[in-house]
Length: 291
View 1 (cartoon, rainbow, N blue to C red):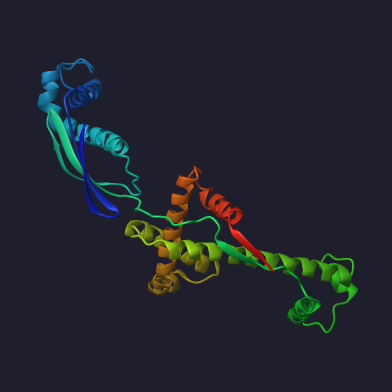
View 2: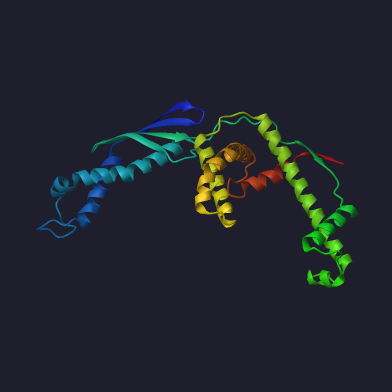
């Protein structure tokens, strides 16, 4: 196999592939054999049709089938040989095939070159979490207003699943604490993400941004549908939804690619759990300031 890689830009490559000899001949033989087993030619039983007759009647079909089977196989081998990290399906062009040789060009999108700066020891601020009595009181007031009640009596509190008002207050305090805890955790992660984004600059593959944007828009439309918004109204809103998510889609792709690069350096598997594992790693390695 002969391969030649041409760099188009930071995220595009052209891979020229040429293969000659037994690989091509054997593929033609395999396909002709398959065709011969199923071909219905008067005067011959399936599987016993002479090759020269198959050549005359099925040559065009076999040629197309060889292309369909051989090009994907050779493409995968070429990508592995060149060590390219392809992130999209390829565009195959200039396919040339005869009985002795096959050649084609695969245009592919690859992961951008990301030059990471120091990602360990990122400064994060942690503040002790506390819930004040006034916060619990405001939550109780909101509960009363929503129920249009002057006061919360024991009967009502028991209806909510609590033996008395004190137990309800304790539950609300815990709920408020968890909300603050989750908000702080999100704040810590956002600080790390902002630092990572600030420290690197690379071209984001537009194909990945479009895919992410499509996912965000699809989810937004689904959310509207679940809220009972009519389909016609959702379709009208789509042109307004798309611009809202464009920057989010680009940022999410940037973050994912940066986290993937860190995963490679830290020998962490790149799978569905990778973003969470990397964030946990970065938090463990962060420079914590506890206040």
